[in-house]
Length: 447
Image 1 (tube, rainbow, N blue to C red):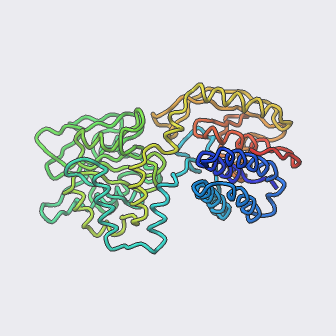
Image 2 (cartoon, helix red, strand yellow; image 1 turned 30 degrees about the vertical axis):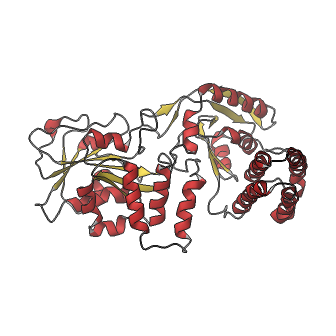
């Protein structure tokens, strides 16, 4: 049985930590020699369970300094943690579809630093008395805008729905919600934006083709909801003679101006919107959630409403969102910044390996762009392999790869299976190659 790729990589990382941190040159030499022998033997010994692997690792650790031993213990813990994952429930996937926010998953992990803070609060041995307030205060500081706050909801739909709590503020007469027909977008959940306010009086105005200020017949007690449709950048609209609450809904956005042409919450707040709502997740570097940023007075009204009791995210999700804001250089940043030349050379190497497989009929390299969301304006240069199997249709092959372990998300273009490299880390190229064209059972080459 072959050792899973993630285990081999974790061992390599652990050995590298030992080699870097050990202070004795002779120790470094011994560690590297024994690590090489261990990695060479692992494919034959993997079936003997991770306990035997841990014993072999301990033999290496004994030759290292105390500092190096601590580093290697962390590597071993990583192996054991991943070996205990319920793969039937949470199957690891690589996203070679060319679409980052794919319905099957992005393939981009949340960093360990972000996950750890959420795990600490879920473990049950933490003091909860002041946790919510401390998280809320820290989120506000990270937003770094005077008289503004940030709330975390369970998901984007719940965040948008909580706007309804602004209709009946006790200190003012009831407000009305106005949505332009051009902004009545379908959210990632599949629900049209106006339907989230079912049960409330929602007025739609204008036509579906363009937006002009004259379309809005509003007054000071209106709530104007404007949504980013992914086709044109969102800008605030001036309403002469009135000052309604302006709310922007962004299904795709970041908190800061992190990526070119991708809208950011802070930028829109500074441009004049009173409240900005977006989805937490892959682009923000945290868990799936709904994020509401805006003026303190408005967010306090939302937070004090009955609706918020059902919309508020658990403190662990809020803490992970906080951690993602303090750690902007996550895995996605690396993928977004990967150069086109890098993708080209990687695709050529993968093509060379795949054409040697008897199962691959043809393999060509394409240069179509990758996207953040299907049908939207955000795209990046990319490279993809256009493959044909000797005896399988592209649809059948794609379905089989999706059912593999780890799973590979691909796309189909006629008779071609497309494997896009934009959202795959370079360290996973060998793994992806073996998923596409598995080696013979007698092979003992590590990924």
